[in-house]
Image 1 (cartoon, rainbow, N blue to C red):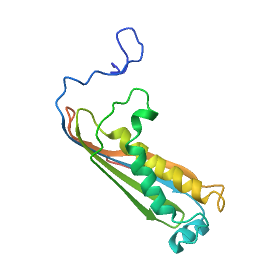
Image 2 (cartoon, helix red, strand yellow; image 1 turned 90 degrees about the vertical axis):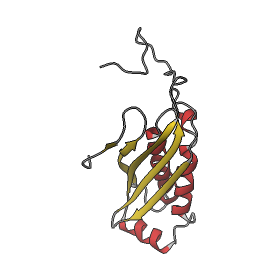
Image 3 (cartoon, rainbow, N blue to C red; image 1 turned 180 degrees about the horizontal axis):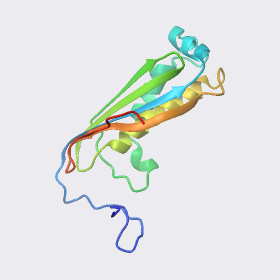
Image 4 (cartoon, rainbow, N blue to C red; image 1 turned 60 degrees about the vertical axis):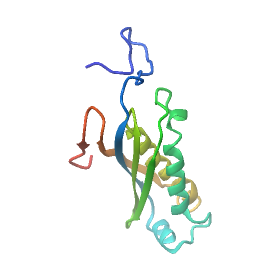
Length: 158
């Protein structure tokens, strides 16, 4: 197996995508924040002391998707042309699903993963005073489309 981020000598390098044609690309990712039922009720009621947790998480996720090259040293700077963060409250966890779109030379899987992960971190940051045991779980790419490799959809939850 050849890793594209390693050159012929095994050293890390940034892949040259200058010769690739831009195309519409889309990726989705999923993450969960496990927390106490009391936190879920506070989120439902809007009574978390730090404010509107879900709005902050959505904005944090969107902002994070646009900053991937600052966080991952070999990631390319691409245009994030669309980003949506959906959040659902369950009995003992929060589900975060993110969708990122571009019309560029490389995919947006890392942008989608970063979006849901940072949204999850924002939730933990805002509820940690109420539930110190909250944690992120089940973070993964659920689908991608566009580019040379086409469409891929995760068939089952890991």
